[in-house]
Image 1 (cartoon, rainbow, N blue to C red):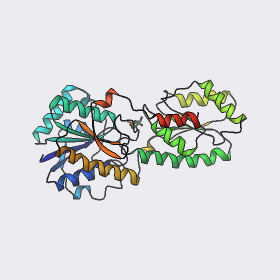
Image 2: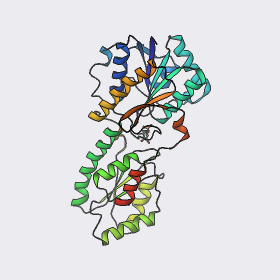
Image 3: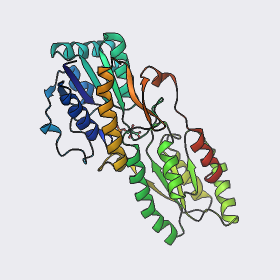
Image 4: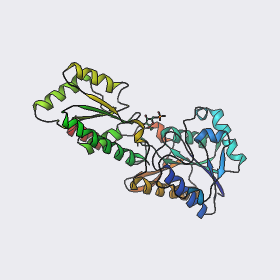
Length: 321
Ligand code: F6P
């Protein structure tokens, strides 16, 4: 390969910049030219790309967001859109594309590879950490720590006022953030899509926790993807049953901010490894982690299977239900 393109797509995640930096530096070290594609697949379809140098990625490893900008592109979900994208790459003489993003991005990357024959490598990067085939994703650790920090503050008020807080964390379809955050904060209860529960059963558990002298933390962590509108409905239900709950939706603060050391190192390792995978002839794979190892995992498996971590779910059942 002598010319590659890189892009970030979907929801931004802390560590995207660290990944861009590693990719650019590793590629330039191997005498590969790099085009940075702006605004994800939308910029790719529009041919919006520019050459990157070592200087263009200086002083970004510590920054949240993405230097290349990102978006969620509807046009790339169509065969026609992906065809235009492949043409734009060929026109610039780009022989391989590296896509940094979550499940939507990596699924799009897989379809592009399959339909156009373009060499494509993915980097799992989403705060949700819900990508099948990789234990870790870039951005998750930072988001978890941001939410923990926020909940530790909320807890001061919860304890002072002896008041229940429903804290909603991100996680479109999964409870990975909620589980880790809830365990780390000693939450009274964790509500995740993997274990949907009826309102009366939740209320009943809270009441028996009180009777047993448990549940003084006053924090219930709710994954946003558990059930649409669950947090509000649960608050309403609890109000009718004598509680005075407050809702706090952490939202996009979990997506921003400086990446943790863990995410910076993970992004750097994954970025450098992606260039090695290219040179070794891999395509249609992502750089995944399996335990502490980096492995090439097929992009085609992402949509076929749903990620699940039974160890964490068991802990939720044991300590926080
Ligand atoms: O996938 C990351 C994520 O932050 C999810 O946790 C959340 O559901 C979604 O993106 C929000 O997306 P947007 O910023 O487009 O509203």
